[in-house]
Length: 318
Ligand SMILES: NC(=O)c1ccc[n+]([C@@H]2O[C@H](COP(=O)([O-])OP(=O)(O)OC[C@H]3O[C@@H](n4cnc5c(N)ncnc54)[C@H](O)[C@@H]3O)[C@@H](O)[C@H]2O)c1
Image (cartoon, rainbow, N blue to C red):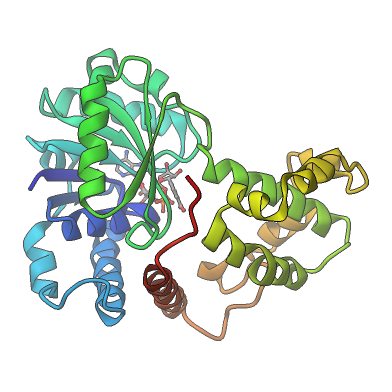
């Protein structure tokens, strides 16, 4: 058991706190916004309820057990004092992260490891020299208590033993860490997601498809095969000449997808339709509360994971 600090208790931070508690660690959670910190405890309880209902954790996981492993800390100093690992999950804002890392360099135990959950940033230039050898990126996917992939990337001066320690501890929590030799902005999964986003927004902006048609194509076409085969094994099944032809095909004019913004997206955001939390994004979600919707998403993800486990997981070549 390790004592772990999570800094930032927002969408990712509260869920990471739950992952570490369920992984057998003692967790101190902090946020610069006291309201967010209080809400985080409620959100952890709600997510734990979903995992219990779905049979993903055993019934010894009571709320009392959660509370016994969790400490909500109003200050950074209290949160990091003598803990062994500090997970940074604050806003994706380079100056904010840089200020926090400078504070952490003063407050963390001299042997403690810093692990950033950044989605896209090369955070290493923002980290003080005294922390460089013990800093690493551990990038989780939402909701991290159900999505098992964790990208791990070392900085130029990270001690390989630190990377291995972090990898082993994430693996011991039942997750699927992937260690990258170098920092790749967006890692692999986020880059693929960004490539899909560019094409999807291009099709929407050009008025060629509706949001329903996009998600229909993904859910009923792409996604099932992704789950069973990934992308490259699927290419093997289709025969590689098909991939060669589709790369050479210029009729789909994917070049427009390289624009840096989308009018459709910009308009929705300008209208306040920012997604499930606001009741509407591309789709209208206002018949249900966000909490109910997140719980229902988790319930379905759990069912899918269990089905995949019963099937023996994805089909793998050597
Ligand atoms: N949202 C996702 O799906 C997702 C997935 C993977 C990685 N990430 C990354 O995780 C990080 C957090 O993202 P999020 O979606 O949870 O954001 P969020 O906005 O929901 O939460 C960030 C929290 O950090 C707090 N905060 C800001 N500065 C702070 C400071 N100095 N000290 C303590 N708390 C501070 C804010 O009050 C806020 O509650 C980002 O780096 C993001 O790129 C997000």
